[in-house]
Each structure stands twice: as C-alpha cells, then as structure tokens.
Amino acid sequence: MHILKILIYNRKEVHIIFDKYKKPSIKDFEHDLRGEEDTQYDVIRKDSNRPADFCKLLRSNNFKEKFVEFLIEDWTRDEFITLITGKTVKLNYDQCYTYEVSSENKIKRVIDYNLSC
Image (tube, rainbow, N blue to C red; front, side, top):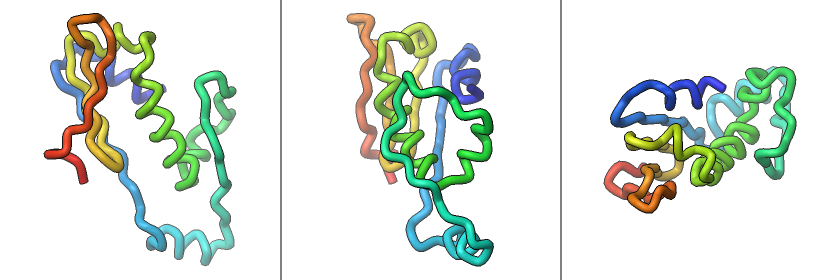
C-alpha cells in the first residue's frame, strides 16, 4: 500500500492529509448526473481481503471515510512500531492525529487540536 511506503522513508515527521467532502458536494451532484450510487460499507477490518480494484473503491466517498477511520484506529497496533519509531506521523482527517512511539515502546496517538480542522 502506497501510504505505508511513505512511512518507510527516513523522515523525522510525516504528514498524511485526507480530504473530506461535506454533503451535498459537487462530487455528489456529478455522481447523480451520471447515475452513479455510492456503495455503502459498514466496517473495514484488518483481516478483510483487499479488493481486486482498490483504486476503484477509492472513488467511493463512503469507502474512503471508512478506510480513513480504519487507519486512525489501526495505526495504534504494535505492528506499526517499527514503521513509526523515530518519527512523528500526523494524519489529518476530521481531526489531526499525531502518532509517536513512547518510551514504553507503545504507539501513542494524541489529537493535536491546534492543527485540527
């Protein structure tokens, strides 16, 4: 996954910013004109199979929202310690989440209200 690749680079700070469209948006209007419907997704889990056409899924606003919500929670797992150690990762979506590895070797996630939308 491309997002994880950017965490591999030797940087002290990484910023990942996701956009969020307020409803109704221009994109909603364009989808309505084309007769497209947004597929609804309830939950994305780490053990879910990756879809064959992941890029196509990213065109779904509902999927993007669920995917980012999944990342916000998932990146607190111990498996990400090696990727986050030595750097600060800031993920901005509905708020700005800062991920760092603590002195206890655990991932710490805090909300940076100064950078939140």
